[in-house]
Length: 400
Image (tube, rainbow, N blue to C red; front, side, top):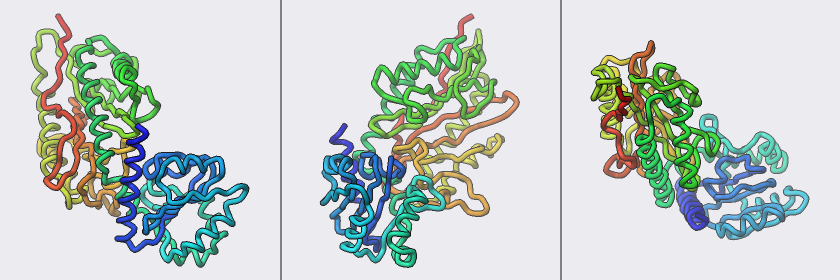
């Protein structure tokens, strides 16, 4: 795991140097304290406990100024050309290093749109402004958003390997749980089967606390982002499960739909099967349409049209989103166009991104709802499905 964490950070910093060169930025400054900047785990694989100033430099010679107590953590990564310690105050050491580097363009983690790119706190920005001088800082500062968004979105080979592993374990646990679900179980009891599957493998939930259950919803009790309840399942229930699993800090995000057969039934009723088939068709359309160069909203429109053409209400959420270190990993979103325009859905799909694809049939008044979600990697040729697709409705017999 340690070697894999180093490899990911090394791949990210090498990519960062390429992006800095492309953007004409001399240095990228990450200021952090007590884990305040969400880019730290992605870029360096560590958390800084005290205030630190990290210079990611276009020349590939990266430097960090850190407290004596944090110094060893940075040296241990093997990522930095120099680790400069400070004792009581960062100010003087920081100014000396800034003067030595004299960047014409200095990127900072500031974003109006993406919380994962907005890691520079107001307090640290004001400290920097006071120390460097307002006019001088304004003359050289630029946002790192485009650089950081691409670094987070475009997965390196080591990252892809981690996500594939998370996906594989997710499918394995789903299949294990499907063999154990019985009519009369509560949502909580079904959720606990997933918790047992995670614990047995030494893994954790990718969303929330480590051993939280996934979303488990019996449709007649309401479909929403909620914890499993004590609602007992009964014959005729549609059960929707949405499960994110974490492996070595990278996650999957896969949903499945189950139908509990009524006595005498060998398959789901026509109205439920039709809703399921429509959701699957919309997912297939999105997977076939998505490719490098298309916009997020274009993928959403292709899938949304399938749902609407079948006579169902339009999707209430986006068709898809990126996954990586987070279940919702920022960057381009496969969502509908709105006014004013949303930068995330106007974004362009790129090679190396991984998306969760989930166009959903959602209806009110107890009518059938279907959620199936697959994870795909964007390649030069289009989408490669990482998960084992659900192409048939999972049915569970409830007995006579």
